[in-house]
Image (cartoon, rainbow, N blue to C red; front, side, top):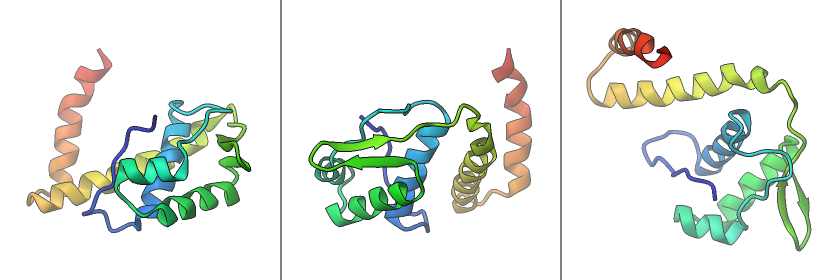
Length: 126
């Protein structure tokens, strides 16, 4: 089961948040080739969004080549390239954008985040 939520403060449309989360899950290896995505209605209920929004996200994922659909069976993750490292900068940027939005809401600057990241980064590597 996909474990993500919709951020109502995020300026991205809901369908794009779903697309980005699925692609992030592929990039970091949570979703693998052949894995099944939840049914449209199931994910719409889980995320508390309109089923048409999820359908739009799935169609976008399909047109981008991230998933394929077997009518009446489900939506599956397409072949994931072995070098998903090309997605890492994209995922990093998406995370940074979300961090900045949250920081700005709390009155922090980018430099405050950078200082905090530099402070905790060495501890994570140990």
